[in-house]
Image (cartoon, rainbow, N blue to C red; front, side):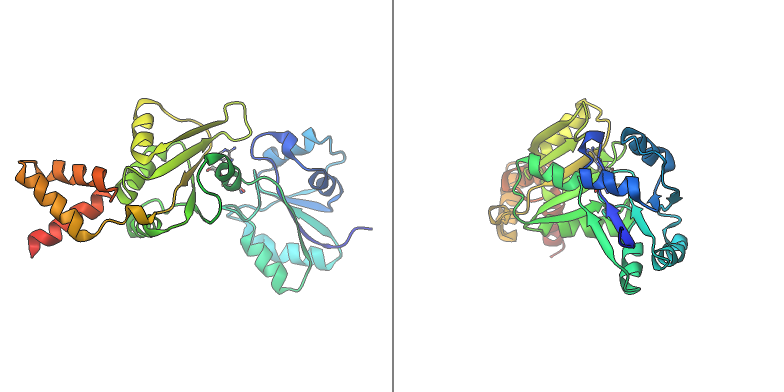
Length: 280
Ligand code: SAM
């Protein structure tokens, strides 16, 4: 006899064979499965030859809050409800966080069946230190929220994990190069666990260049090396290098680019220092 409760189940991020035995058993025996998309989860259930299929309840970013009370009352009635998302771990840049909090506050049992997650998978294969890392998920798309986050990221000493879509990858890499400097080491992990799985490693400057020559498709994760002490050049050193460049007849634009490349500081930081020194 199975216990009642909410069971969060990690599902494959591409290769359906990555489903675990425990995950498969939970899906087959659940009283109901909460999922983002019935077609997507239907495919996984067909792959597992799950017959008869437990009822599916749609729980996505739009319905998570409204479904919550009904999920809680089903668990109180003794049901074991499984929650999956389209891919990877629920609640990681996916629905689940709200429901988990409410179910926990109601004092009801929660179990997690661990499975793949794109960020951790990318981190492990990136070649960048996995010892201390910061999971950023998707960055804010625009405005002050985006610049503030980019600024925070640029100062973090920890490895950073970012999720991005193919449509926005070029813009995001350009912004990262601007805020973190072109010499920061990074990796793009694309189509993990799928046929076209690929890691593209290099500095942010090299990745920006690579993407200007080739359009990247599929799902991807960006891994960034943390800011290192060596990259911390003092403002005085930057200003002195800028002055040298200007004395040699460089335009402000060229001097900023050159100093950023040599010192590893971001172009934005160098330019802001230039502006504040010009004002004084
Ligand atoms: N819950 C998922 C997890 O645990 O990784 C993340 C879901 S989030 C909505 C989807 C994002 O994860 C994609 O835009 C991409 O950045 C990343 N992603 C998912 N599958 C991936 C894969 N196979 N290869 C690379 N990135 C992937």
